[in-house]
Each structure stands twice: as structure tokens, then as C-alpha cells.
Length: 248
Image (tube, rainbow, N blue to C red):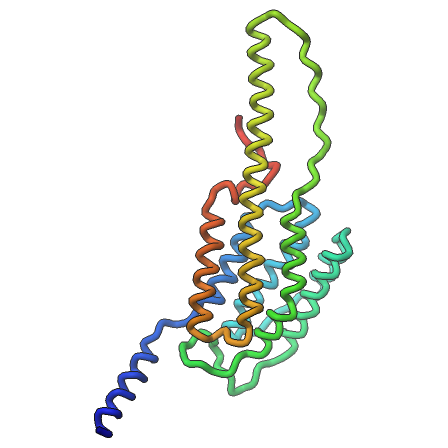
């Protein structure tokens, strides 16, 4: 009886050791960086996008137990260049949190790599940073998701009435091209909004699971979130920045 129990325990330990390395959070943050890089953003929103990309990169570094090299001056510049005070405040708050995370050193007995399958002490910097950053992340993603105010278009000269069938055809083709371009730009905006919405949902999921990031159920949830994000990114329209040149 004791011998069979010993072998069952040994098999259980071997099975736990055979579990694959948990890289779900690191992989999600890399996909999030890629989504930001490929999403179109108005020039006024570039500061928000850079701040978010830096933050997502920092999460991956914290998961790996790596040291953070935080550029406080760069975040101050990004916030100062942002005309929207709410967005500027969110950038400053992300900078403050990243500064705190870079200044705090994890306990010496903490495993250097958070990707192992064995439950261990959570890296407090990571869970604390994710929870505290979620409001700022959601605000910045919402700012990126706001449709850009289109520049005033140069009005087309009124078409002169003509009985010439060739000129009438040219006028109809011009109107059709303008309508097609507007529809394509709207489709690109909608698909980009889907990517940013998945980013917001993914980070909200992270914040909700911040206290148990190493658990296998959390890993599965993050894998599903990354799959949804990558599916949204796979739509080519999501990679076409609104306002970019669209061929007729």
C-alpha cells in the first residue's frame, strides 16, 4: 500500500515537471506591442501609443525577472507633448508606476524566471503594477480608439451640367471613387477599433487575475485572450491606418 502510494506520488511529481513552460503573459504582451505598432494612430496619439508600448514591454521584462531600465525623462516629454490633460495624466501615472517597479528589487529568494510551472511567490512588482496601471491603460486605449477628426476636405467644384455622355461618365466615376474611399476608411477604422478593444479587454483580464498569474487556469485565459487579439490583428483592414492612401 505504501509502495503504491509512493509510486503515485512520484508519477505526479514527474507529470508536474513535464508541464510546458508558462510564457502566456510574456506572449500576450509581445502581441500587444505588435498590435500597437501596426495600428494606425493620429499624430496627436503617438505619445499614448509609445507609452503603452513601453508599459507592455516592461510587463514582459518583469515576468522574466529582468531589471527595468526606465527612462523617466522620455515619459515626461511624452506627457508634456499631449494636449489632452486626461491623457497626459495617464501617461504620467504609467511613468510613475514603471519608476516604482524599476526602483523596487524582488526578494533574493524569488525565482529569477516566472515562467516555471511550479506555483511560487508572486512577483509583487508585477501584480501591483498591473492592478494600479489598469485605469491609465484603459484611458489611453480609449483615447487611441477615438476616431480622428478628419481634416477639412477641399470641396469639389460643382459639376457643370452636360449632355456629353463621356463627361457624365467621368463625373459618376469620380463620385464612386470618393464613396468607395470613404467606405474603406470607415472599415479600416472599425477593424482597428476591434484590435484596440481586444487590447483593453486583455489588460482588464490581466488586472482581474493579477494575484494568480502563475496558475495554469490563468495561463489558459491569457492564451485565449491572445488568440482573440491575434485574430483581430489578422484582418488586413486592422493593419491599414485610417487616412492612408487607398487605391481606387
